[in-house]
Length: 402
Image (cartoon, rainbow, N blue to C red):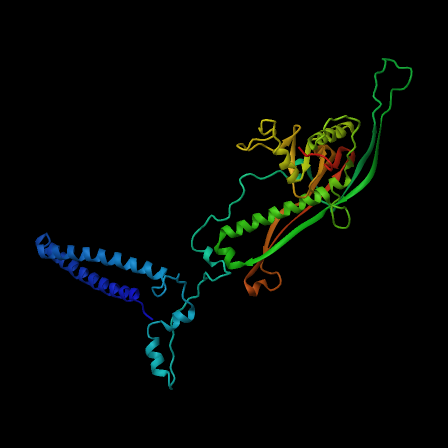
């Protein structure tokens, strides 16, 4: 049914067409006046001015009517979506008389140009296509990962052969210029070992049209896939079981916490972390990182003095997480009440076989005929732990964390 707005729209179109025709006629008359008299006649000038004003008013009314038609459907206030191909066809000029003529009998043909559009139906991404919206906000500050604590190398193999240090007897001593006995001998023992290079991967499927029309969505999917890969990599580097396709993680190989004899009054979790750092030092290494669960790190950050001032953090600042002069990685890969400290730079090393890559393919399964695309994100990494004694794992059971 034709609405009042649509009727006005058609009338304004007709009026504007008439005004434009009159303007054209008077423009031709103005050219004749200029050739004959070198100036416009008063009547022609007045008419031209009159039609120009009317043209401006009609153009404004036409624009307002167009906007109103786009926003409203039948004047009811509901948002109007694009017309389907069927609606466009039956509303095409000439279809009504054709249908009336051949509805009963007879043969004839009718053609009209129609176009399909990506709609904003529920469950579709069509409503993202019109404007560029910033609706997916990425975090300003990214946390540290286990990867950030380690030193990394590159490999071209599917496994890494290496030697693990199992003991170090340091017998270095002062000797005379011409010693009567042989100089002291120290002893370092090793054992051969190997570490697999594992593949970490995941994928999603998406509409090819949506990814083409919404560039922001494509980049967001790319970023989320990479972030998800980092999370799984961290879980493997930390707690991989070493069984089957899994990495043998640092926590899995680390030495158990054992107080070397330090007496601590009213011991807290922070005290225990300091003793664990000492345990690494006594193993001839220097700890350069601490790994905690986000729950335990939050409890430490909330530690206050007797006058309720924060001891380790300031809510107004963006301080880098750290404790006892070492960076802290707070990760959900670590269970609550557990901790790991160690010499990440010297005691272990990560290996990149293939960097994180994102691949899009239309040739997966029936993607081609369904206009879908499979987006795959994967990497190949390995880990070698050279000295398990350079890492100490433990828990806060029975202690106050802060």
